[in-house]
Image (cartoon, rainbow, N blue to C red; front, side, top):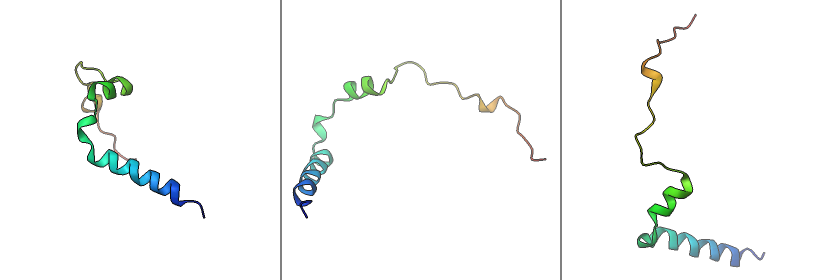
Length: 54
């Protein structure tokens, strides 16, 4: 017993995250994730020859 209050709080937070779209600060999110605005990293897998099973 005693889980009712915690579950209600989690539901409240989940509803807020689901329905409050206008509060998303994308610049802050980019800074937190360490995203850069430069070119995307190059994919070097095309330069490697395919490995064949022995």
